[in-house]
Every structure is written in C-alpha cells, then in structure tokens.
Length: 343
Image 1 (cartoon, rainbow, N blue to C red):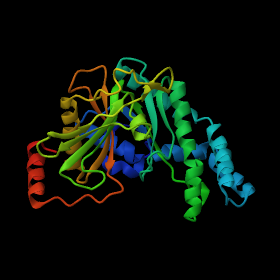
Image 2: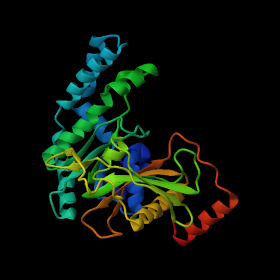
Image 3: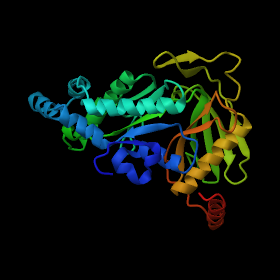
Image 4: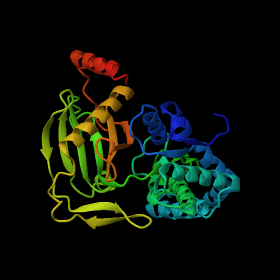
C-alpha cells in the first residue's frame, strides 16, 4: 500500500495485521464480511514510526536512556516510563499528519450525521489485551489528535518496559503500534463472547457474558456479568446466570464514569433471548470465517431496534486454553453451514 498510513476499515483486512495491528485488521476483516461493525479508520504502524522520527522523539528517547543508565528495579521502570512518556506526549504531530487525521474525522462525522464520539484504541501486531491506553467517548478533532498521541506514548508504560528488560530487549525497541479511531456505540449493554467454553475448550458450547453500559466493566473485571451458555448447533440457551450488577461504565461529558446501576435493573437480564441468540450467530460466523475459536466483544445499541442494534467491537483467537478438536460430524456440519451462508 505504498506510503499510505491511514485507512478506512473497508480498505483493510486480516492480511494487513503487520501494517495496522491485529485489532484494526480484524475490524476491517469483519467490515469486509458485511458484519455489523462501528464505522472508523486506522492509523498504521508507519504513522507511529513517522511521528517519532519527524518530531525527533526517537533520538531524544535514546539520549534519555543513555543518560539514565542501568534500569533494574521497579522504581527505575516507573521513572523511565515517566520520562519517555513525557518526551513523546509533548511532541506535536507534523502538520500534514494533523490535517489528514482531522479530515478523516470530519468525514466520519459526516457519515454518522453528528460530531461523533469515538474510542481511540491501540492495535499491536501481537495481542496485548489491556497493556496500552484506550480512550473512550472522545469528541472533536483536537481531542482525537491528543488521544492518538496518548496511545502512542503508552508503549512506554512500566509494564512494557519491565517485559522488555526481562527478555533482554532494548527499551527503545518497544514495538510500534497502530491506532483505531472507532465510532462509539450508545451501548445499553455490552460484553464478550467465546465460541468455545473458555475453561474446558468444549466447542459444542458458546459462552456470552454481559452487563449494563459499556463493556469496560466486563472486560476489566469490575463486576460479575450475566452469563449465558448457548448450544453451538441448536442455538438454544442451555444455561443462564443473572448476576447482581451493581455498577456500570457510562459515557458522560468527554470520557466515562462508573456509576451505580438502578436497583430495579441490577437483577434483570441485560440481554433478551433473541439478543443472546443473535450474538451467538455472529460469534459462530466469526469462528467459521477465521477457522479457530474466537474471543469477541459486542455491544447493543440503545438507539436501534433488534437485530440492527447488535454491533461487534473486536475479535481475536481465544487465548490461554487449547480448544478441543471438533469431531468429524462437527466439521461436516460446520462446512455445510459455511457453504450455505457463504462464510
């Protein structure tokens, strides 16, 4: 793709993982599949590299590390992190880069019909869930630019620095990342889904977890979410556990807040049965397309009727378990479904 460093999701797919990072590549792939994905655009890893070089941040980083000397303790990690993030975070983007990003944001707003709130997220070539900064409910061109730089600075967090040291790698070689700028969904509820049992690896069962508000309360482990077990083939809900959902993360102002869930909603299922099945159908389509069990994130828009209300926010292979190999019959059924639905 030459020297181009910014892309609409429609322009990228999973083959561009090393160009834009896994999260952006998979958002693009889902968009190409025709699945319900929020609108947005991606800054490639080249954009991050160009920013560091053209602002001279890369040279200042190396000079800082030479002067700092040996980095051995937790206190050192934190001091180095603070110093490097200060260097990167105080740099202003090259003017043409600023103008291009602002132009893309303007077009996104035109597509959405409003000055749209977006999330600004990191996208590494290797998945590091929760390691880099995520900014939610970002509004306006100036804030999109500011938060993009904020994501770039986060490659020098103390966790990443400690990992580099443990692996004998230079701190200045911390991996560069892509950035996703994604339309925010006015989420009534949100959560995650696994196309196999996330504990046993049983591929005959899918697990969906969710709670009120934005998905950060579920992904971040702030509460025990509602849980639904769905039979992979019949799509029947075979188990449900409704939790006492005390808090939710909600968009407010320019950012988010954690607030109490009203008492009359705490013990009510955040999803209807048809929404559970709709999420399961989309999750299954993802696994059939990507060829391995998927760990996906979803949100239900409070602004649209079912089924248009379901959105997919992310997908990646299930990590940490070895999914059981499907039986011959399972593989045959999957191939039939894949052929019928052209997945």
